[in-house]
Amino acid sequence: MLLRLLTPLIRAVLRLPIVARQRWQWARDEVDVAPGSFVARTAVLGKRVRVTVPAYIDPCEIGPYSIIGRVVIRSANHYTEYLNIQEMAQRKVIGGKTMLKPMQRPIRIGAGCWVGDNVTILEGVEIGDGAIVGAGSVVTKSVPAYAVAVGNPARVIRHRYPEEIVELLEPVDWWSWSDEKLRANKDLFELDLANVDPEVLRKRLAELD
Image (cartoon, rainbow, N blue to C red; front, top):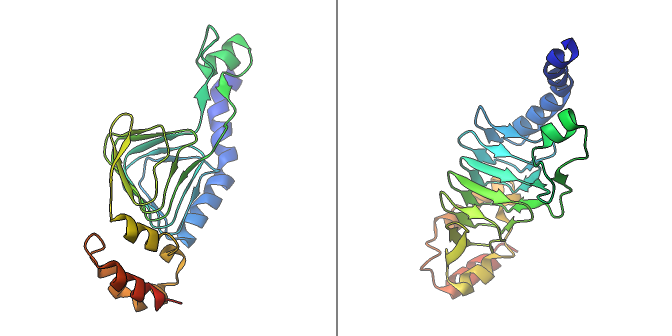
């Protein structure tokens, strides 16, 4: 009985070094995670990711400069063919084998994405760079780069920019640039990419080389 009562405290103490290392990495990379969030120790949050409100984040990868709202990112799934589904009851009470399936494919959210509030993202989903997922969506399938997806299940309703502009942008990994290079190319971030002439953008991007 005493051991059962002390187990949560023991786990919390054992997690302290892991949490400290995670927080140090976030501070180094200027990652901002809202208080009250759960972030798995193996989740990788890229530079300047912002989790704006409390979120639940299982193991996954979130690319730099992404904005994450009140999300549930679930990389785990349950076996459904057995009598019980709950993992805690199965392992601690019944003493049976786990009800959690091994993760088949990781969840990846690209760089520069915006994931709105009350979004659920399920195992194996990849959200491309620059994509937007609207509030309340349940994402069961991957979302292409620079697409806008909404709904339950989420579906792509449009792209942020015309197809030719998206093709020009796909090789541009601006999120890996230094702060100095970002500031030196401020005009690029002030272009209306939904209406810009593709040739104008092409010439401007050529100046980056």
